Structure formats: structure tokens, C-alpha cells
Figure 1 (cartoon, rainbow, N blue to C red):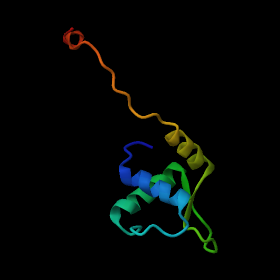
Figure 2 (figure 1 turned 180 degrees about the vertical axis):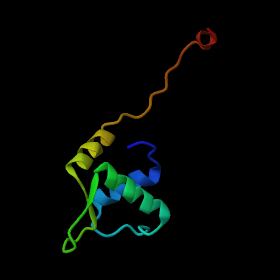
Figure 3 (figure 1 turned 90 degrees about the horizontal axis):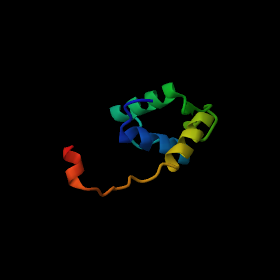
Length: 85
């Protein structure tokens, strides 16, 4: 999954945590996110008799665990004279 944008992550998390349809599901950005996530295999459409419209797959659950395990960026201090070399 390349070229992710924040709306992709937001839609993915919505599919994982919420049962109701996304409130902006018809917006072009969310349609793009939905298609990208379906192609990647991290979400799937649920059966019509299901309360949820989409849910995460096993692959999506693993990806979520990877996202949650990602550390915050760290700032490193150094001698600025070393950058000139």
C-alpha cells in the first residue's frame, strides 16, 4: 500500500472500530480510501445482513498492530559542524 494519506488511515480505523457507515462515505476522498484499502486486502465488505458495512481482515488486524507499535519520532542532537562534511 503506497502513497497513503491521512484519510486512508482514518477510514481504516473507522472500519475497524465502528459498526455504522462512515458519515462521509460518499465523499470522493473516502471512496478513494475505500477502494485503496479493499485492493490492499486490509478491509472487506460484510454481508448485507451484518450490522457493519466493512470490517478489517486478518491482514488489516496485523497492519493495525504494526501501526500501533510504531514509535514516535526521536530528535537527535549533534554537532552541526559534522553536517558540513
